[in-house]
Image (cartoon, rainbow, N blue to C red; front, side, top):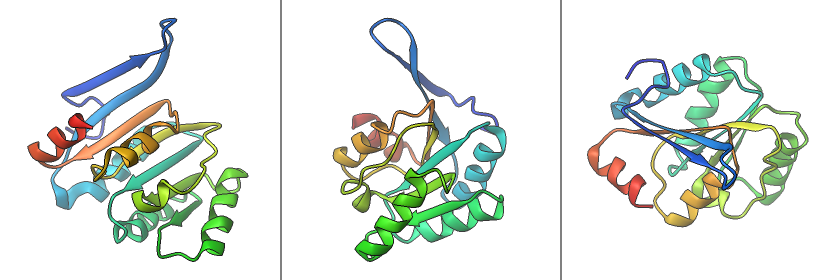
Length: 160
C-alpha cells in the first residue's frame, strides 16, 4: 500500500515478440479511501493522457471533481448524459483537448475511445461484466491500475 505503484499483486503482459505491452497493478484500498488513492496514483505517475473507468454511474462526477482539483483537464461521460453531450465530451478527449476521460462502464461499451497517447488507465472499481473489463483493457495503456477494496472484488477482477 502507500502512494507508490508497488502492490502485492503485479502482472506484466508482453507481446509475442517479448516487448512490454501493459504494466498491471492491483492496489488494495479501503472503499472509503478510493478517491484519495486515485489522487496518489495520479500524483505519482507521469502521464500525458489517462482514462478512469467505474462501474458506478454515481462515481463519475466525484472522480471528475478529484481530477479537476488536481488541475487536470477532463471530461466525464455517463449513460445519463444525452447523446449530444456524450459525443461532444468524447470529441474533446479524442481530439486531445482534454487530458483525462472519466467514463461509466455502461457507456464505455458504446463509445470509441482514441487510445493514441493514452498511457494510464485506472479501474476505480471492478467492472460488473467481462465485456466492460475487456473494453477497459483494449484502450492499451502503458499502465493499468485497478483499485480493489475486498478479497471478493479482487477475486472477481481476476476471474474476468
